[in-house]
Image 1: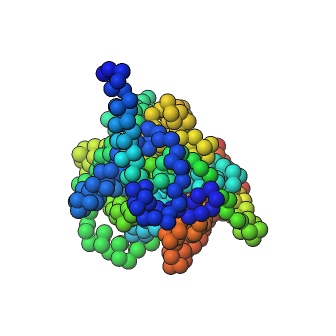
Image 2 (image 1 turned 90 degrees about the horizontal axis):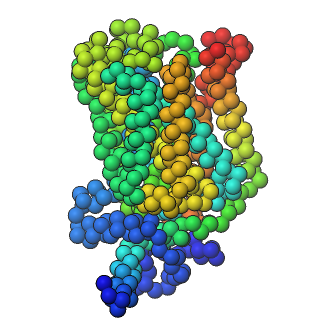
Length: 470
Length: 73
């Protein structure tokens, strides 16, 4: 939906429809850019598929941002966190809890997709313009900080995966950076999306690993239905796992990414149904693969899983290979490389979108680098900084990976609140605003995320300064 | 291509461009997307609530970061 400079509402129908509908307001067309030409080519294919009644082809054309956001968030630190939880506590509460967190993610990401499809603008741009530069820069600052920490953790995951094959941090850094440059080199959103989507499908390696450890299906089903056994241990450790599991599924970058990618892809209100299918498909795949990582890790629970701390080397994959054979270790290591690589691509993209939107520069994969220098430079720079940091010898890699998720959880409530305000903004969203029921669910989610992050942060801090004992 | 062909080609390109742009909503054009939207009328209560949330997450973030470095040392 368009808000004209004078505040008038303009139809969301394509220009062709506007010319014949009558009564709509025609604004002078801005000069066309390369970005417009590429996006219109993609939209022409969507139009053709819709007119020709080719439902599956239409779905193929319109899926992407939702699956990328969800599988991108099944990233290195998340999979390490899930597997480490499984190794420590076995099957139990955290297995169905992953499904719950993905359900939460679906609610949030649907709003994000809808905002992008209706307003054709990214989250950073909307917050900056609608709520003012201060809030816009706060949002971008939060994102930049959490993305940098998370990207370090992604390179850590790639490094852990490669360490299993006796390759070092330098290879991990080079591989991640090479992928970023490769996916950006086409000057088309469609190409970026399809390459990353192809890579993201290898997130299914965690399902293969889970099948290979031959879990007891009765125990999996029992945990799923009963949320038990509830893990024991220190409250602080549980709070850390709780917060990092939430942060492993819903994060600020996902919201920035899916909204900006939906706008960049050219989704419109007519595509909302497919956008929802895309989001639900991504969430379902993400939940399955996330649970699979925990189930694979749970194979270590009776083999000293709680004491696995050597993730800076080949920790989890090596431990799995000792328990269930080399093949499982290999599959898990490859899964970690994939999880880290896909997240490096999506998270650096979300940083590029946010910075470009906040400084008012072109931020689209449909632009050539010479026309969107800030977007591409930010994309590469943030990945480069993270890659350099993992080359520092003795860096506390597991701790960085877990704390990246916790920080994302702590900062998420502000991002969610602005997203909910935007999704209820009738001037922007017209008839596509949130329903009353969705708002109630959204408020519960914000409260849940805020409590999850704060509980660990406050408890850890009080223990660190010796005001309470764990 | 002769000099006399050029205006014709340019016109054809222009028509093709116009045809393609018809598949976009008007506000999907890059030039239109960069037009600012009007400011949201934040009430003082909403502003106060947002600042409260902002300060809360910054304090908790500081606690997490402090704990992270304290545990390292």
